[in-house]
Image (cartoon, rainbow, N blue to C red; front, side):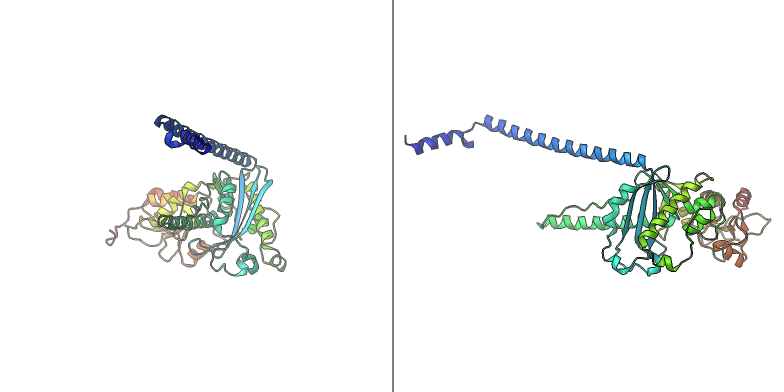
Length: 398
């Protein structure tokens, strides 16, 4: 046999075709086992990485269990406006800043006039989309006590923007999946984050009212000065107009934190969990009690304005002003339970306004007095709901 024939013979001996079925089965089993081991190693490494990240997150929250947040927006309501800037500071239990975050946001829409947010046009050129910062917000807010001023509005904007980013990502992922099934080039699945999950939400504006603070100016700086904190004048000035928006945002964020740490020693705080809140028709995050009361069908005729000294009548329309010390949910629930009708908006059909402030009033209480609608304090109202008279059914109600 020549050398070529010998080589072919040796090759034939080791070729897969010459192997017995038993050998092939053993080899397949070995390959499968190796692949399984490699997969197990990858999963173990991923789990170890996730565990390390979770441990680091817990330690970070233990060090800084609070996070103060302020925003600027293009308008008042989350349903019709967009967030323009967001500023966060995590804080220790002694109000010492630990980690900070600031972003100018590109919503793809008109950000509104400069005086609303103080952001120059050139700064928007490098702005990020909310979907690009949501994971960072999740990391800083999740598991912490969230301190804000005017929670319905601020939390409303955060939830609204997060949902919008998540919905956009979901649509993109569905589109990519369809393209993949048609043989198109596969794209990575977008994961933008989730709606932040704070442990608790504390509203410094509502807390001031809960503690009976009479406010002439409900803005952060106005409330801070009223409770005795050293704060910049709430009025606009040339100096403030020339200050970078990032610096002003951080100043306000730290002031919100200072408000909280001051007021928590002075009396009750307005505290809610995210699970207790839902969006109203304006996108403001309010309590389930409040939104459900507003949406409840009216089956009784409105007998008109409440007459002081007499009883409330089922069907009367009740408006609750912010200037009360009692939890508004208690007032609103009592309204619903006794057959009264609740309304967020004050109109000429309003029967009574619950408000503790009778002098130097503004807002709902001021409009009530102008329309001749009586005011009742929260305590007086709760006494009145104990003896509400029966109302008349509206024949038009289904």
